[in-house]
Length: 236
Image 1 (cartoon, rainbow, N blue to C red):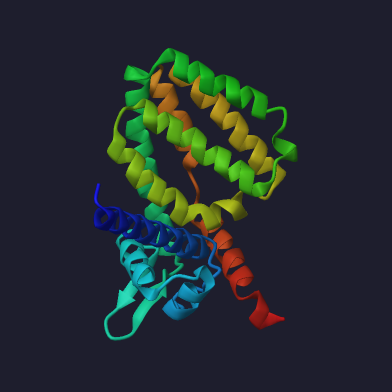
Image 2 (tube, rainbow, N blue to C red):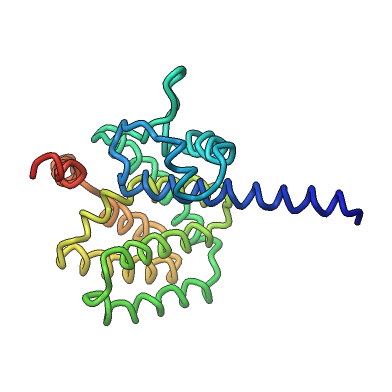
């Protein structure tokens, strides 16, 4: 490889890494609403924080707009995603539809060894979940559902659901704060894994419906709590 080609490759790799760093940084701020809903994203500040140029920041913002973590207003710039009950309800609904198909397929085609491993992992978590942090429990919850989706063998579901998990994570964190909710979630995972291991699609889909269901009042209260936290500084 010529010296010029090596240089070009190094520049490309550096640029790719810079875009990824910018994507991760802005996505994390959007997920946790470290940037307030509808607030303009200052590209210069992001570039300075990460010590990179504005070019990879702009590329990252374009990618994140495709995933709806940010949105673009022509002539004005990029803004953090909105936070509304309607959007959250729609995301929860799409999540259920996708996971319902995944559970049915996992019951039919999933590896018994993989499901047994999943069940074993959550039997261990049942004994430790009370001492697990909120963030870690959410991570484990998302991983549980992603493992079921992976069992279904449909890679497109994985892509769509990863996006949804990240966009509803802020509300999910609020939802699992109560110990009763935590215990219910862990038991629901155990029951669901057992049903899939038995290849009982009817029971598994019923358990999934009970597990993922969230009523409008509960969702509205979680969003209200979230808004209070986002704008807490303005109220102090």
